[in-house]
Length: 225
Image (cartoon, rainbow, N blue to C red; front, side, top):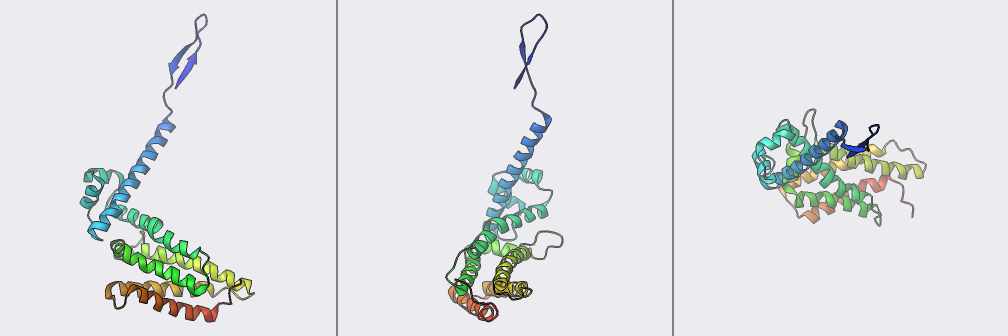
């Protein structure tokens, strides 16, 4: 960028204008953000390959960089783990599960089955990412993928139940209790099944759907057409 400088008795001349410090800072901030996102993506791939006990060396190999580069963007492995948990939640788990909740299914049973099937399919499709999430469940003061996913899905389901109750002029206070109960039941049963594998995945989905729908169908008013 240039500016025009006028001197009395002389022709105007142009002088270069240095970029503003704020502009340089903004570009550097964006560069760091983008680079950090690339390294998180590499870490997710490292988890898929090496499993929950992945090392920073695994991430460096996945990203094609040295460990030194990793530590320029993350203070320690714990910070990297937090970033990976956040990425799995926002880019893998929640879009699939919340997406099913937002669809217009034929009836309540079909809606429940779709969400349960989506969760079970995640265990099947991304076994290492699923194991990684549970390996870091209950992280004190840090990201907890399991708790965050439970909360997001239960809150969304609870809001839908509350709307149904309100439409029927019934009290809505029980909606969140039922929602957290259903989500907790499905998550715990599916986690047990992920190790036991006592029945095929489709049968597990049918069993959990029957249990959840059997309870909710007796509690919720009929859905309006």
